[in-house]
Length: 293
Image (spheres, one colour):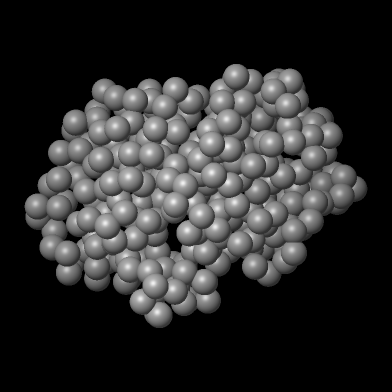
Protein backbone atom coordinates (compact mmCIF):
# COMPACT_ATOMS: atom_id res chain seq x y z
CA UNK A 1 0.00 0.00 0.00
CA UNK A 2 1.07 3.60 -0.55
CA UNK A 3 1.80 5.53 2.65
CA UNK A 4 4.07 8.44 1.75
CA UNK A 5 4.43 9.71 5.32
CA UNK A 6 3.75 6.46 7.13
CA UNK A 7 0.49 6.02 9.03
CA UNK A 8 -0.61 8.98 11.13
CA UNK A 9 -3.79 8.85 13.18
CA UNK A 10 -5.26 9.95 16.52
CA UNK A 11 -5.00 7.37 19.32
CA UNK A 12 -8.74 6.62 19.15
CA UNK A 13 -8.45 5.50 15.50
CA UNK A 14 -6.19 2.57 16.40
CA UNK A 15 -8.71 -0.05 15.24
CA UNK A 16 -9.42 1.61 11.89
CA UNK A 17 -8.15 0.60 8.49
CA UNK A 18 -6.04 3.13 6.58
CA UNK A 19 -6.08 4.36 3.00
CA UNK A 20 -4.01 7.18 1.49
CA UNK A 21 -5.91 9.65 -0.70
CA UNK A 22 -3.53 12.63 -0.44
CA UNK A 23 0.18 13.07 0.30
CA UNK A 24 1.80 15.92 2.17
CA UNK A 25 -0.18 18.89 3.43
CA UNK A 26 -2.13 21.38 1.31
CA UNK A 27 -0.95 24.21 3.59
CA UNK A 28 2.37 23.07 5.11
CA UNK A 29 2.99 26.44 6.78
CA UNK A 30 1.75 26.13 10.38
CA UNK A 31 4.50 27.53 12.61
CA UNK A 32 4.36 24.72 15.19
CA UNK A 33 4.03 21.69 12.90
CA UNK A 34 6.78 19.31 11.76
CA UNK A 35 4.58 16.64 10.20
CA UNK A 36 4.17 15.79 6.50
CA UNK A 37 7.32 17.61 5.41
CA UNK A 38 8.66 14.60 3.52
CA UNK A 39 6.39 15.00 0.49
CA UNK A 40 4.79 17.78 -1.50
CA UNK A 41 1.02 17.91 -1.50
CA UNK A 42 -0.71 15.86 -4.13
CA UNK A 43 -3.91 13.92 -4.57
CA UNK A 44 -3.63 10.18 -5.16
CA UNK A 45 -4.88 8.90 -8.50
CA UNK A 46 -8.02 6.79 -8.54
CA UNK A 47 -5.96 3.95 -9.96
CA UNK A 48 -3.64 4.06 -6.96
CA UNK A 49 -6.56 4.37 -4.55
CA UNK A 50 -8.25 1.31 -6.07
CA UNK A 51 -5.02 -0.70 -5.82
CA UNK A 52 -4.79 0.16 -2.13
CA UNK A 53 -8.49 -0.49 -1.42
CA UNK A 54 -8.04 -4.00 -2.79
CA UNK A 55 -5.22 -4.53 -0.27
CA UNK A 56 -7.14 -3.31 2.80
CA UNK A 57 -8.42 -6.80 3.77
CA UNK A 58 -4.88 -8.16 3.60
CA UNK A 59 -3.45 -5.50 5.90
CA UNK A 60 -6.38 -4.56 8.14
CA UNK A 61 -8.82 -7.47 8.00
CA UNK A 62 -12.45 -6.37 7.99
CA UNK A 63 -12.40 -2.88 9.55
CA UNK A 64 -15.63 -1.04 10.33
CA UNK A 65 -13.98 2.33 9.79
CA UNK A 66 -11.40 3.71 7.37
CA UNK A 67 -9.27 6.64 8.49
CA UNK A 68 -7.99 8.30 5.33
CA UNK A 69 -4.30 9.15 5.23
CA UNK A 70 -2.74 12.52 4.39
CA UNK A 71 -2.40 15.67 6.47
CA UNK A 72 -5.79 16.83 5.20
CA UNK A 73 -7.40 14.04 3.20
CA UNK A 74 -10.58 16.08 2.77
CA UNK A 75 -8.63 18.40 0.49
CA UNK A 76 -9.28 15.70 -2.13
CA UNK A 77 -11.86 16.66 -4.74
CA UNK A 78 -15.51 15.87 -4.07
CA UNK A 79 -15.63 13.44 -7.01
CA UNK A 80 -12.54 11.59 -5.77
CA UNK A 81 -13.97 11.26 -2.26
CA UNK A 82 -17.27 9.96 -3.65
CA UNK A 83 -15.55 7.41 -5.91
CA UNK A 84 -13.25 6.38 -3.07
CA UNK A 85 -16.28 5.62 -0.90
CA UNK A 86 -17.80 3.55 -3.71
CA UNK A 87 -14.59 1.52 -4.02
CA UNK A 88 -14.40 0.98 -0.26
CA UNK A 89 -18.00 -0.22 0.04
CA UNK A 90 -17.60 -2.47 -2.99
CA UNK A 91 -14.40 -4.21 -1.91
CA UNK A 92 -14.45 -3.82 1.89
CA UNK A 93 -18.13 -4.28 2.79
CA UNK A 94 -17.41 -4.33 6.53
CA UNK A 95 -16.76 -0.57 6.47
CA UNK A 96 -19.50 1.53 8.04
CA UNK A 97 -17.81 4.94 8.21
CA UNK A 98 -14.93 6.91 6.69
CA UNK A 99 -12.95 9.65 8.42
CA UNK A 100 -9.56 11.31 8.22
CA UNK A 101 -7.65 14.46 9.09
CA UNK A 102 -8.94 17.74 7.65
CA UNK A 103 -8.15 21.42 7.60
CA UNK A 104 -11.27 23.48 8.08
CA UNK A 105 -10.67 25.18 4.73
CA UNK A 106 -10.85 21.79 2.97
CA UNK A 107 -14.60 22.38 2.92
CA UNK A 108 -14.55 25.83 1.31
CA UNK A 109 -14.92 24.39 -2.19
CA UNK A 110 -17.54 21.83 -1.16
CA UNK A 111 -21.20 22.85 -1.03
CA UNK A 112 -23.67 21.87 1.68
CA UNK A 113 -25.30 19.54 -0.85
CA UNK A 114 -21.98 17.88 -1.65
CA UNK A 115 -21.19 17.41 2.04
CA UNK A 116 -24.64 15.84 2.48
CA UNK A 117 -23.73 13.44 -0.32
CA UNK A 118 -20.50 12.56 1.48
CA UNK A 119 -22.50 11.82 4.63
CA UNK A 120 -24.83 9.53 2.67
CA UNK A 121 -21.91 7.39 1.48
CA UNK A 122 -20.44 7.04 4.96
CA UNK A 123 -18.18 9.99 5.67
CA UNK A 124 -18.38 11.09 9.29
CA UNK A 125 -16.29 12.55 12.08
CA UNK A 126 -13.34 13.99 10.18
CA UNK A 127 -10.71 15.20 12.65
CA UNK A 128 -10.39 18.94 12.06
CA UNK A 129 -7.40 20.86 13.41
CA UNK A 130 -9.12 24.18 14.03
CA UNK A 131 -6.67 24.79 16.90
CA UNK A 132 -7.95 28.24 17.97
CA UNK A 133 -10.69 30.81 17.51
CA UNK A 134 -8.40 33.75 18.28
CA UNK A 135 -7.47 35.64 15.11
CA UNK A 136 -4.24 37.00 16.56
CA UNK A 137 -3.08 33.48 17.42
CA UNK A 138 -4.21 32.02 14.08
CA UNK A 139 -2.21 34.70 12.29
CA UNK A 140 0.83 34.24 14.53
CA UNK A 141 0.77 30.49 13.83
CA UNK A 142 0.34 30.96 10.06
CA UNK A 143 -2.80 28.81 10.04
CA UNK A 144 -3.99 30.30 6.75
CA UNK A 145 -7.53 31.19 7.84
CA UNK A 146 -9.30 33.34 10.40
CA UNK A 147 -12.00 32.56 12.95
CA UNK A 148 -14.81 33.79 10.69
CA UNK A 149 -13.84 31.36 7.93
CA UNK A 150 -13.52 28.51 10.42
CA UNK A 151 -16.93 29.28 11.88
CA UNK A 152 -18.55 29.49 8.43
CA UNK A 153 -17.21 26.08 7.42
CA UNK A 154 -18.27 24.49 10.71
CA UNK A 155 -21.75 25.94 10.15
CA UNK A 156 -21.74 24.34 6.69
CA UNK A 157 -20.82 20.94 8.16
CA UNK A 158 -23.49 21.32 10.83
CA UNK A 159 -26.14 22.24 8.25
CA UNK A 160 -25.15 19.19 6.19
CA UNK A 161 -25.48 16.93 9.27
CA UNK A 162 -21.85 15.84 9.19
CA UNK A 163 -20.62 15.36 12.75
CA UNK A 164 -16.95 16.19 13.21
CA UNK A 165 -14.17 16.05 15.76
CA UNK A 166 -12.48 19.34 16.64
CA UNK A 167 -9.40 19.98 18.73
CA UNK A 168 -8.21 22.54 21.21
CA UNK A 169 -4.45 23.15 21.13
CA UNK A 170 -3.79 24.14 24.71
CA UNK A 171 -1.10 26.80 25.22
CA UNK A 172 -1.01 27.76 21.54
CA UNK A 173 -0.94 31.50 22.22
CA UNK A 174 2.04 31.30 24.55
CA UNK A 175 2.45 32.95 27.93
CA UNK A 176 -0.25 35.44 28.87
CA UNK A 177 -2.60 34.70 25.97
CA UNK A 178 -4.55 31.77 27.37
CA UNK A 179 -7.72 33.59 28.39
CA UNK A 180 -8.47 34.96 24.93
CA UNK A 181 -7.48 31.68 23.27
CA UNK A 182 -9.83 29.69 25.51
CA UNK A 183 -12.79 32.05 25.32
CA UNK A 184 -12.66 32.68 21.58
CA UNK A 185 -12.22 29.02 20.69
CA UNK A 186 -15.20 28.03 22.82
CA UNK A 187 -17.16 30.84 21.14
CA UNK A 188 -16.65 29.60 17.57
CA UNK A 189 -17.52 26.04 18.66
CA UNK A 190 -20.85 27.11 20.16
CA UNK A 191 -23.83 25.40 18.54
CA UNK A 192 -21.74 23.30 16.16
CA UNK A 193 -22.25 19.57 15.53
CA UNK A 194 -19.02 18.58 17.28
CA UNK A 195 -19.19 14.95 18.37
CA UNK A 196 -15.90 15.16 20.27
CA UNK A 197 -13.35 17.78 21.31
CA UNK A 198 -9.85 16.37 21.67
CA UNK A 199 -7.29 18.39 23.59
CA UNK A 200 -3.55 18.40 23.08
CA UNK A 201 -0.93 20.80 24.40
CA UNK A 202 1.57 22.80 22.36
CA UNK A 203 4.93 21.07 22.16
CA UNK A 204 7.81 23.02 20.65
CA UNK A 205 9.56 20.87 18.09
CA UNK A 206 13.05 21.57 16.68
CA UNK A 207 13.14 22.51 12.99
CA UNK A 208 9.83 24.38 13.21
CA UNK A 209 9.64 28.13 12.77
CA UNK A 210 7.99 28.49 16.18
CA UNK A 211 10.91 26.73 17.85
CA UNK A 212 13.33 29.14 16.19
CA UNK A 213 11.23 32.07 17.37
CA UNK A 214 11.32 30.69 20.90
CA UNK A 215 15.11 30.43 20.74
CA UNK A 216 15.29 34.11 19.74
CA UNK A 217 12.94 35.14 22.57
CA UNK A 218 10.14 36.11 20.19
CA UNK A 219 7.79 33.46 21.61
CA UNK A 220 7.47 32.49 25.27
CA UNK A 221 5.80 29.20 26.18
CA UNK A 222 2.91 29.19 28.60
CA UNK A 223 3.76 27.54 31.91
CA UNK A 224 2.30 24.16 32.81
CA UNK A 225 -0.11 25.44 35.46
CA UNK A 226 -1.01 28.34 33.17
CA UNK A 227 -1.98 25.86 30.45
CA UNK A 228 -4.18 23.90 32.82
CA UNK A 229 -5.91 27.08 33.99
CA UNK A 230 -6.46 28.00 30.33
CA UNK A 231 -8.03 24.59 29.77
CA UNK A 232 -10.38 25.15 32.71
CA UNK A 233 -11.55 28.44 31.16
CA UNK A 234 -12.11 26.72 27.81
CA UNK A 235 -14.23 24.01 29.45
CA UNK A 236 -16.23 26.54 31.48
CA UNK A 237 -17.02 28.50 28.33
CA UNK A 238 -18.07 25.48 26.26
CA UNK A 239 -21.81 25.09 25.75
CA UNK A 240 -21.67 22.07 23.40
CA UNK A 241 -23.15 18.69 24.16
CA UNK A 242 -20.09 16.65 23.27
CA UNK A 243 -17.35 14.32 24.43
CA UNK A 244 -14.21 15.88 25.89
CA UNK A 245 -11.20 13.67 25.27
CA UNK A 246 -7.68 13.94 26.63
CA UNK A 247 -5.57 11.01 25.47
CA UNK A 248 -2.57 12.81 23.98
CA UNK A 249 0.98 12.40 25.32
CA UNK A 250 1.29 16.19 25.68
CA UNK A 251 -1.47 16.43 28.33
CA UNK A 252 -0.78 15.32 31.93
CA UNK A 253 -4.11 13.57 32.48
CA UNK A 254 -6.27 11.10 30.56
CA UNK A 255 -10.05 11.46 30.51
CA UNK A 256 -13.05 10.87 28.30
CA UNK A 257 -16.11 12.60 29.71
CA UNK A 258 -19.50 13.89 28.59
CA UNK A 259 -20.18 17.60 28.50
CA UNK A 260 -22.00 19.39 29.98
CA UNK A 261 -22.95 16.61 32.43
CA UNK A 262 -19.43 16.10 33.77
CA UNK A 263 -18.14 19.64 33.27
CA UNK A 264 -17.63 20.53 36.93
CA UNK A 265 -16.10 17.16 37.69
CA UNK A 266 -13.59 17.71 34.88
CA UNK A 267 -12.75 21.24 36.03
CA UNK A 268 -12.26 19.96 39.58
CA UNK A 269 -10.02 17.15 38.35
CA UNK A 270 -7.79 19.62 36.51
CA UNK A 271 -7.65 21.76 39.66
CA UNK A 272 -6.45 18.71 41.58
CA UNK A 273 -3.55 18.36 39.13
CA UNK A 274 -2.71 22.05 39.60
CA UNK A 275 -2.87 21.71 43.39
CA UNK A 276 -0.91 18.48 43.75
CA UNK A 277 1.60 18.36 40.88
CA UNK A 278 4.30 21.00 40.83
CA UNK A 279 5.24 23.15 37.87
CA UNK A 280 8.64 21.46 37.83
CA UNK A 281 7.15 17.96 37.79
CA UNK A 282 4.83 18.85 34.94
CA UNK A 283 7.67 20.44 33.02
CA UNK A 284 9.78 17.31 33.43
CA UNK A 285 6.88 15.25 32.15
CA UNK A 286 6.63 17.48 29.08
CA UNK A 287 10.32 16.98 28.37
CA UNK A 288 9.68 13.23 28.37
CA UNK A 289 6.64 13.65 26.09
CA UNK A 290 8.70 15.69 23.61
CA UNK A 291 10.53 12.50 22.66
CA UNK A 292 7.35 11.32 20.90
CA UNK A 293 7.35 14.25 18.44
